[in-house]
Image 1 (cartoon, one colour):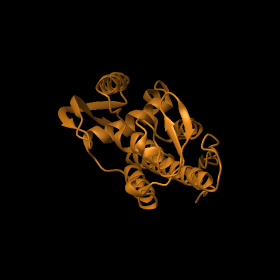
Image 2 (cartoon, helix red, strand yellow):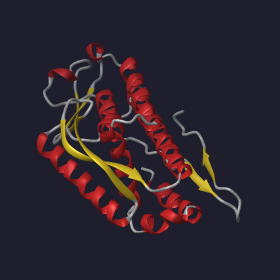
Image 3 (cartoon, one colour):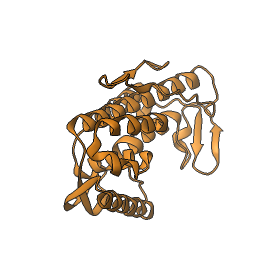
Length: 233
């Protein structure tokens, strides 16, 4: 969703943070931000993007109490969307209403980051370990220690590496700001989608917001992050 901003982030920040330039240049930007998000998750540290996701989930739950669902649309993982009598989606196994899907999306993308099934979760954890090793070999991170823990949903993580990123405090703060703004944009995109469904639109017509986060630098001046409101705010 924000791959364009990430690429721009890497280009500009490395020019101001020479110590990380070589390591960052050798690491794919999207994987870098995925690793950064997941490293916060497994370490159990609270970040601004996680707080934004929690706010979004609370908002969706308040607008849609589980026992008061009146949604007419439900989506099956393999069969896609189906229209039901309002309020009956929950009676059909494996179908999820739009609000449930919005909550699941924010939780998966920003809080859980790990699938619910054991086989998929193991595959994702192994992927994280491989990324962490590759980042450590490039000099981008160091593994400070290993720990065994559980996710917020109670899933066993096994033993996972806890990382320290080798970049400046300014760069770490900027990465956090970009992720927080991206989470906010995703929340607003979902809000608009849900409102459109409630107004009669079909759920498969979800509008994706264009990038709204850019980094700007003129000459030798300090770099600035420019963010403008998304349509759904």
